[in-house]
Image (cartoon, rainbow, N blue to C red; front, side, top):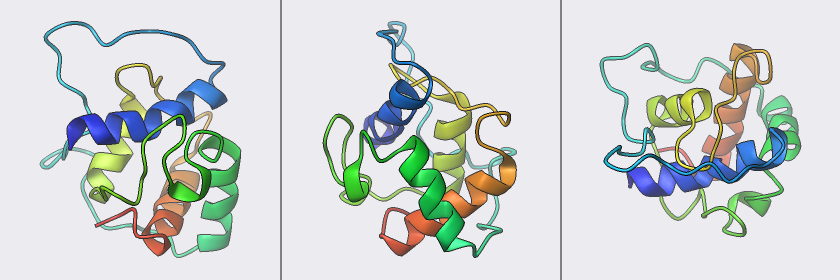
Length: 123
C-alpha cells in the first residue's frame, strides 16, 4: 500500500518538478503510508471539486491520466486516506519529489483531495 501511494504521486512530482531519477535510499520505507497522529490528519476541508480537478490536470494528469495507471500507478485501484495523500504530496518518496506549499498551496491540496474523492481515489 505504501509503495502504491509513493508511485501514485511519484509522477506528480516528476512531471511538475522537472523529472529526475532520484532513488529511494535503501532501508527507508515509502512515506506514503497513513500519517496518523501527524500534522497531515483531519478531514478534507474543501468541497471545491472543480478547482481540485484543475490542480490534478496541472500536476497529476501526465502520470495518472484520469486517475488511472500510466507512468505512475492507478490512484483508483488502491485508494488512500487523506492523511496519507497529504504526506505523499508534501514529502514525496522514491522518485517522487515533494510538492512544497509554494507549488501546491494548502487550499489547492485540499481541493485536489476533494476531486480525488470524486474519482474514488480517497478512502
